[in-house]
Image (cartoon, rainbow, N blue to C red; front, top):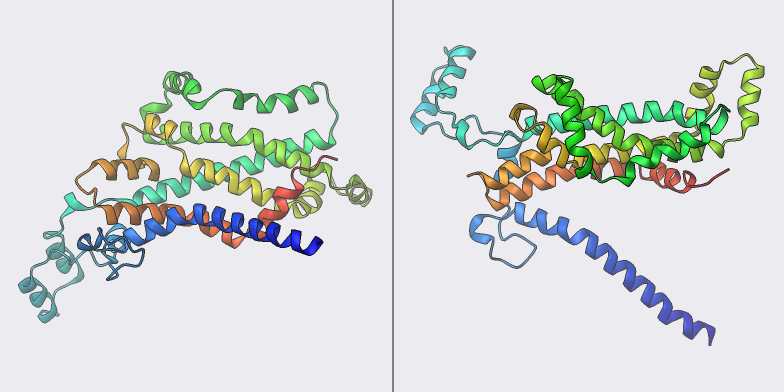
Length: 320
């Protein structure tokens, strides 16, 4: 009787899991399928392309695009004239480049990667020391500060946009590309630091203080204890915080759209994809290919450090 009741529950449970996985994965499968289809195959409802098309990925990654528009006669000339120097060949090829049809995906990718990695690194670095002070040190106002760090999440980004833009403008940061980039970095840091402090603070409380006391008795300083004891024991939580901070900066659109509006050379990927969608280059296979390439860094992070991520998520929510 008990066994007969468990079978339907198991079937229902596995069916629910399969449905959730399908619901989460299907958009990515659809994106991948569309990015690999030729234009004449877009009406095909099958997720498997009739013929694989990699041209969209080659265009975005600038693979083999230098000689794409070179006439056949010029190619033969380059192949049959070995005496030409490298600069002469480059000068000939540059004459036939069509820069009006090129989407600078790699430039936007580098901008987003640099900004996201920097914001995540600074957020983790500052939150380690801030969270340690919350969990180990005693000083006036500690409890109020610890509760107050999450206060920023009571306000939506749209409410903070105009004040932050005005502050950055009055400070003269928006007058240059470097200043604008720095202002955006500070905003991402403010967005990620509160929850990073909260997560790491809870995790540090689970580490027995006796381990740190033993290190201090052996002559280790407070900083040495953090570096040699606390950080190695908290790798899983630190990895979790890093991924969280990276994802926020990587996918952020609102602040980037306003702050970087006048500086196209430092556009991030969300802005670049928006520009691609409304431009003459808005071809579905190219849009889907760009979306897939944009999602790859986050997917790669999750797959590479999945074990540490799971450990950090479970342990970071435990209060000591």
